[in-house]
Amino acid sequence: MTTNGFTVAIDGPAASGKGTISKAVAAHFGFAHLDTGLLYRAVAGKTLQGQSPAEAARALVPGDLEHDDLRRPSVAQEASRVAAIPEVRAALVDFQRSFAARAGGAVLDGRDIGTVICPQAQVKLFVTADAEVRAERRFAELSGKGMDVTPEEVLKDVLARDARDMGRADAPLKPAEDAVRIDTSTMAIADAVAEVTALIQGVLDQMPDQGA
Image 1 (tube, rainbow, N blue to C red):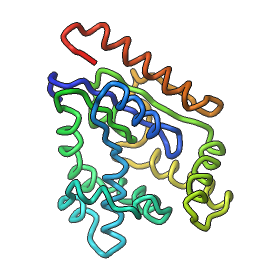
Image 2: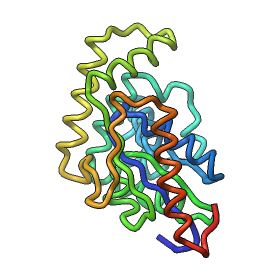
Image 3: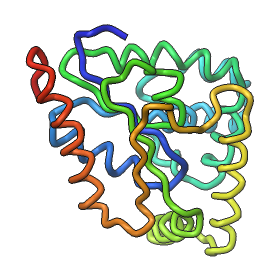
Image 4: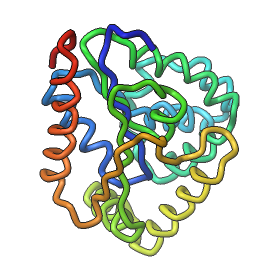
């Protein structure tokens, strides 16, 4: 990572709130934002259409991240599976690091940003919440989009994804040693965004050559 940009790395499990927080703080500071989970979902979408995971990852282009069907539960589950493949992760590392190094600042959220992709990020966060709370959030999101799911199915999927993400050999989901942990189980999203915004501002204030 170069020193030209200011990088915020936000990791955490599914439906922890990291995506919402990431978008909000990126907008607040005028930083670029990358939901790295979309990279794996885009690869998953291609594998569900018959491509090999490694081939799909190597051929990924920014336009692949804009498909409306990337939020489907089947794509989410496949994304968790392809994310455990070392060849897939290796193919996507340069894309993510290049984004993180851009001038003007960047916020990346995912599962291995602070530990693998951007270990030198100026701010590292690990956002989490109880599995039951995360399942409730995901159920509300999916059912609100008209998807035919049950709370029990969503909780099962959340737990399965946690097990795969935390148990994979390559870049497992875990907080960086110096990451600030934020539990959103009982926290309003506005409060979580305010806490993260204040934390980032505090770091920026100690860097006279960097501006928000």
